[in-house]
Structure formats: C-alpha cells, structure tokens
Image (tube, rainbow, N blue to C red; front, top):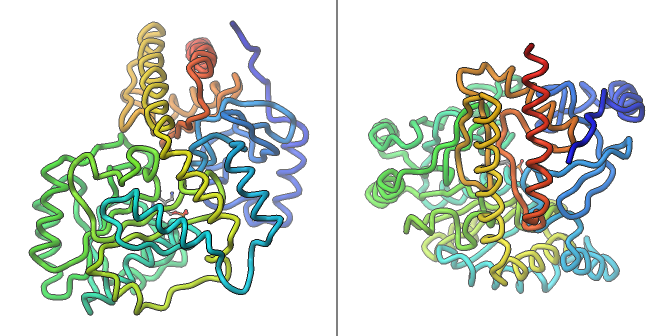
Length: 413
Ligand code: PMP
C-alpha cells in the first residue's frame, strides 16, 4: 500500500501556533516544543484512540511516542477509561485521598519485589525528588551520585539545562559514567562520609545518543557500593517502568533498589507518579514532608489501579516485545534495501534509530518524512510501543516507514 505524504503543516496547526506564540512563551515549552526537533511534526493533537493520534487538522498518525511514554495500553483503553469515568462521577480531588490509594499501593507492593511500601505523586520529577529526599533523611547525608547526561527531571537540583539553574542547586551532585563502575566508585570516594544515594536509570536512555543497556556487573557493582557505603540505591524507573518488567526494570538482572521512582506508564496517561521502597527506609519515608495539592486525586489512582490490573493479566508486555521485535527487524531490512546504515539500540519496546555518521540531519529528515507519511516518531528521543499496537498496525507502520526511506533517498538526489 502507499500513502500520499502530507505537504506541509495544516492551516489549523499554523493558526494555533500563531495564537500560542502570543500567550505561551516560545509557543510551547519543554519536550513538547516540536520546533526544537522538527519542521514537520504537528504541535497540537486533538484525540487519540488505540495506537493512533489525530492532529488539529484531522490528520491521523500511527503513534510511536505514546504521549512520550505514559500510554502503555493504548489511548482510551476501555478498562482504564471506565475506571476514570466511574471515579470521576464520584469525585476526584476530595478532602482526603480515596480508598483506591490503599488498594493500588497494595497491588504495587505485591507486583514489585523491591517494594514494601508505596507513596503517590504526580510526575517523574516528584518521584525522583522524593526518593532523593528520603535517602538524605535516612542517611543524614547530602551527596547524590548521578550518571553524566542522565535525565531525572526538570527541577533545578537535577535539570540538565543551565538557564535559571545555579551551581548551588546542584552542589551535592557528583557525576559518574553510566556502565563504568570504577567511575562510580571514584565518585563515592569523592563524597567521603557524606554520601546519601546512588541514583541510576535502568538503562542509559539519554537523548541524541545510542541507548545502552545496563551491564549486569555494573548494576551489581552499584548495589554492592550502596551496601558498602550505606547509601540508598535509587532506580529511576520513570521512563522504563511497567513497560519492560512489571516487577521493576532491574528484576531481570536480579538487582533490587532500595527506592524506585515511577511515573509515565503507571496510569496509561493519567498524571501519576509513585515512589516505592524497602522496609529499612519506611521510617525515613514517613519522616519527610512531601506533598502536593493534586497528589491524592482519586481519578489518576483509579486509572493506575486499572492499568496495573490489566498489565498483570500478562499479555501486554509480551505483546510489546513481539511487535517491537518485528518493527526493529522491519526497519533494519528497509534501511538495508534503501542503502542506509542505521543503528537501533535499547529495548525493542523503547526503540531509537540513528543513521551512521549522521549529525542528526538525516535522522531528522527521515523522521519528518515518516510523520508526513502518517507515523509519529522522534529523531533523537526514544520512541515507545504500546500494547495497542497490533501485528497489523506494525505492518502498516512499516509500509509508511518504507515510503519515508524512499522519500529520503529522493530528497538527497
Ligand atoms: N526520570 C526519567 C528517567 C525520565 O525519563 C523523566 C521524564 N522524561 C523524568 C525522570 C521526569 O519525569 P516528569 O517529566 O514526569 O517529571
């Protein structure tokens, strides 16, 4: 099958951008500012269904970003939507949290071997910040080891960009290199007797570079380093959590963190973050003052509970593994046929694709061609599969990415 590429951004899109520039700084901010990565991606979306999203001009795309991670079961998953509507009819933001918080905490603790307790918040940044606060409270120490280039949120203590962030905000961070245990040991030595925590992502998923899985010796080495120094090992599972392994993304490695930060996929798109931890840190977790006006809202918690119940049925994760594998194999074959050398790295459920020797211009042109052909994906941030992507959807996506390779080849002539 073939699809005609859409020519340019739609009229509604352009009009919305004009209006947005008047009332929203820069027209948009943060990771969803599409002008930072593309001249072809729409900025505005109006609806989503399963593995498809629709932009303001009514153009439909196969969604390979899934809301940048949260949508793990597909947009408007019927079971999750029913739970949302049911809770919404009874109330969302009440004077006390809903019993569903207890039910969901029980299910999370039952699902995650390293979790003896759970607390809820809104975002990944809330979750990582809370983990760091608990670790500092437990240890009475300040230093946090973080990997170079790792994203743990947009708060000043961990932001990767400099504007508005002071060196004092990050004065107690000491950096190590991902998958380089010796550098982590050295960072710990630098912290001396002031080390509170080692913060690490389940894999290296920094933007604009190949993804790197954690080497088992590295993960085990960090665990041993934390044990030796009394620091808390914090796994930032915000991006990978509940897409790769329900028990936590380092379960397959047999390495259990003391604290885990969760968000994105927890509630299939509803605003929810979580911190889980071990018994030894329960008292510290009780002692810190962390909160937010919306942290107790019942609707996202009901969505989280419905999402986890669905994930625990056991079909979604294997499905994503299967469809992701087919997507990776299909893209590899297409690149070869079209004479391009590409690299695809990281888990197949969270792919990223780069062209060999590229300064991201070829990758951006290909991603833009894909979007014009009706596949929404990113040139340098990892993509996300959902359980709503069927085998047939993947074939339809591959038809379009094949056309995108053709477009790329034509435009190079
Ligand atoms: N940690 C990781 C690994 C992330 O990928 C993100 C978000 N991309 C965050 C923390 C911050 O999450 P949020 O944007 O929800 O605050």
